[in-house]
Structure formats: C-alpha cells, structure tokens
Image 1 (cartoon, rainbow, N blue to C red):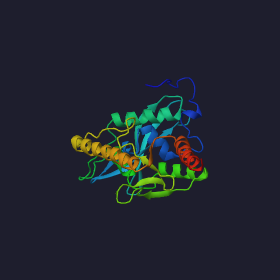
Image 2: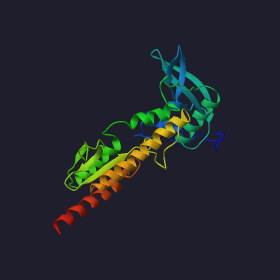
Image 3: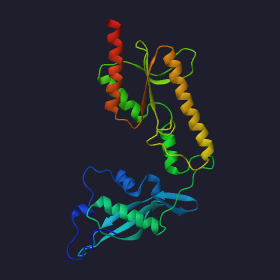
Image 4: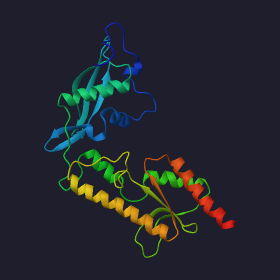
Length: 253
C-alpha cells in the first residue's frame, strides 16, 4: 500500500492536484502504463478510454479515486477506492492498479488481421512506418541548423532499390534512422508473443537486409551512418556533422 493513512492531517495538495503545464492525457497514460491500458468495455462490443479522478471530500482526510469514462456522450463513473501516497503521480498509479485488480478494466481486442501481440505493440509498429517520423524530423532540423544541406528519402545508388532517410550525395554519406521495433534494437525491441516465429523470421530478414544495404553502399564508396530512433538527436546530429565535415575537409586537402 502507500505511505500514509491521512488520519491525523490532510494530504498535501501535491498528492491530488495536477500541476500546471501537465497534459492530462499524457499523465494518465504514464500512470496506467500506456494508453491502451486505460480501456473499459461499454457494451455491444464498444470500448472507451477511461481516466482516474482524485478527490478529497470536504472535511475528509482520505483521498478517493474514481474511474471516469464517456458512454454515448454521458460521463460514467465508478468508485475505485482510497489512495495514500505523497504525490499525485503515485496515487494515480495506485488507483490504476486497484482498478485493474478489481476487474474494472479490459483488454481491447486487436483487429482480426493484426499480427501484434497487444495494442501497445501495434501502436509502436504503426508509428514506425513511413517517412518523416519524429526522430527523423528532429535530426533533420538539427542538421539544417548546423548548416548542412541534404536530400530526404532517396536511393543513394542507381539501380539499387534501397532508400536512405537522409542523404549527402556529393559527400556520399547515407543516413538511416532505424525504428527500434522493425530493425531489432537490442535495447528496446520486445519480441511479439503472437505469431512469434513469423515475426522472428521477418525481423531477422530486416536485419539481414540492413547489413546487405550497408555492404552495397560501402562497396560503392559510401559512408553509412545508422541512428536508432531512441538516440539523443543532438548526439546523432553531431556524429553526422563530423562525418560530413571530415569528408569535405579531405576533398580540400
């Protein structure tokens, strides 16, 4: 349980009031352990995203937590129980745990054709598709600020159908911003439990393709730089900038 019973004093405001500047949705997601862990069934195969409300009744010393969601435009609410931590974040997390233990929450089913093991995994997979991802945009912005000019999402080599995210054609430098899930990041990639063998084969194929791409480019005289999506953008931009400057300095000497 928590750290207080609030029998002698009222809980501090930091235990239940949200701080200014904190986004409610992000706060609830963190406390619940992810957006898709905030799901309640509302009947007829429908689901809603819930949130936890913390309240201190007038004249009371105990904090109470309530689960709230919307159904057909009307707010629904269920009492979860008392929470007793010093901070709002800890009390929200405690309330979500209590709601889950009490069976108030449910797992929203995946679409029939999905290969993901959970809604969270599916969200990661969908976020890692296509170009102009957040890590790419952050990296490109820093490179532009450093005075570098580049091309985006092109084939470095003619006749080789492999596209790089950021390319410096004159300096023959190709940068790939790799998503942790699709490219098998050793730090953050979590194997899918659903269709495990199929996903294992696919991800191994992706890694083999990445290695082959590196070999093809290097054999043609290119420098290949790979950046994981979780890397610090400033550090990655610094690494790329140094590589470009070294190539340019070598041309002048």
